[in-house]
Amino acid sequence: MFNIVLFGPPGAGKGTQSERLIEKYNLVHLSTGDMFRLHISQDTELGLKVKKIIADGLLVPDSITIDMLEEEAQKYPDAKGFIFDGFPRTVAQAEALDAYLESKGQKINSVLRLDVNQDVIKERIAERSKISGRADDDAEKLLKRIDEYFNKTIHVLPYYEAQGKVTTVNGIGAIDEVSERLYAAIDAVK
Ligand code: ADP
Image (cartoon, rainbow, N blue to C red; front, side, top):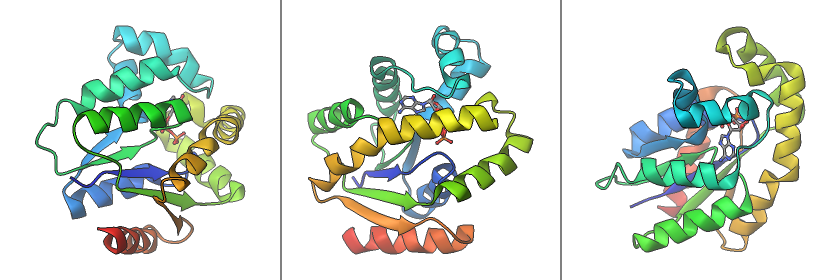
């Protein structure tokens, strides 16, 4: 198995690039943001619980997020590997993910950090908000998401750096260019 964490702030391009990576490396895409949005669109119990938290641009509590992620991952016992997109977003989530993978005799092989500056993030999400229909894409909620990123999520990086797993990839440029950089980073450790 080859398990990748795609790491970066909102608007870094994690979702877009994940689509490319799952094709090229035959991996399963696990995006907690997509899972939450599906729950919300289907009005499930979980969806109703997290709807406002997400619309406000805040992180969903760890226990809810971790349980949902593990339940989803269980559905793919034959996967060649996973791309974790938008997860882990806290150190507690990273620890839970390591424990989960270890219980399956697996691990995270590579953490790819998409590096983009705040101006680019804001531009991209302003563009996306015109078509995404996402309540959390408006300018004020985006600032909340960026706050959450710098208060909580950024600490995930030193956690994986201590394990020697982080590769930083320049996330600015054409989608294809960024993909090529990610492929090179993966092929270097695969
Ligand atoms: P983006 O990366 O563009 O912010 P995502 O689709 O990854 O968007 O996440 C959207 C929202 O879903 C987050 O702002 C947060 O409210 C919630 N969410 C997604 N993943 C997690 C997570 N791992 N932990 C807590 N909340 C999460």
